[in-house]
Image 1 (spheres, helix red, strand yellow):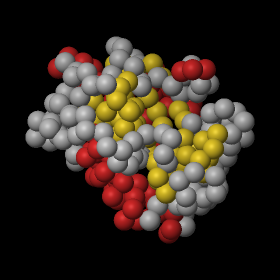
Image 2 (spheres, one colour):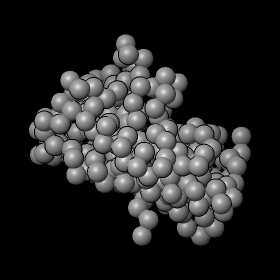
Image 3 (tube, one colour):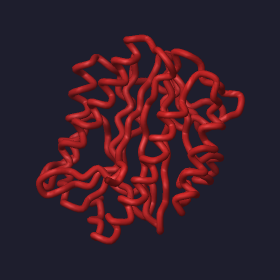
Image 4 (spheres, helix red, strand yellow):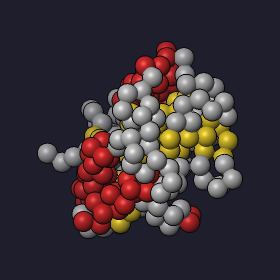
Length: 251
C-alpha cells in the first residue's frame, strides 16, 4: 500500500511533535544514570510532553500503561516502566517515545549507556545508530523501500549483528502506525518513495542472533539468547534531494 504524502501543514505539525520527542530524549540523556528507576524516567517524559501541549502517543495505545517504552539490556522493545526496575552501572536502556501534537505524531527511540558499558555493547550501539542514518540517507524520492531496508541490513551484516525480523519501521502521521511497514532487511519491496512520505525508521540489532520472544506481560520483547539489543529510531520525511529528520530539536 502506498504511503500518503503529507501536506506542508501536516509536516509543520509533525516537526513540532518531533521536536517534543527530541526534548524528551535530551532529558533522558541527562537523567539516565545508575539508581534511577524506569518509572522515574516515564514521569519525566510525561511531564515534558504535557508541558509542550502534546499527548503521550503510547499511553493507552492498545492498553499500554506508560508514556515511554523502557527496554533494558536483552529487552528489545516495549519494556514497561516500573518503580522496581532500577538502572545499574553497565546497563543499556532503549527509550522509545511518541508525542501527538494537534493530531500528528512524532516517534523516536534511542539506546543509552548507563555509566560505563562493555566495549562490545558500545560497538553494538554505534553500529545500530550507523544503520539508522544509513537507512535515512536513502529516504529520497525515486528510491524504493528496499533501498532503505538494504542500507540498514548492510550495516548490520558489516558488524556481524542479528537483525530483529518481526518488528521494524512504519509510516507515521495521524496515527502512530501507518502503511507501509519497513523491514530492516531486504524483502524485495519496490514501493517507490515520493517527497512528503513520512516513515519512522527504526533498526533493532542484537549482539547475538535474530530470534526474539514476547514475555508474559504480552508487551516486553527480549532476545531469545538473552544477549543485549539496541534500538534507534527517527521519524523521517522523504525529500526530492535529501531527507528531513522530523524528530530533532528545532533550531
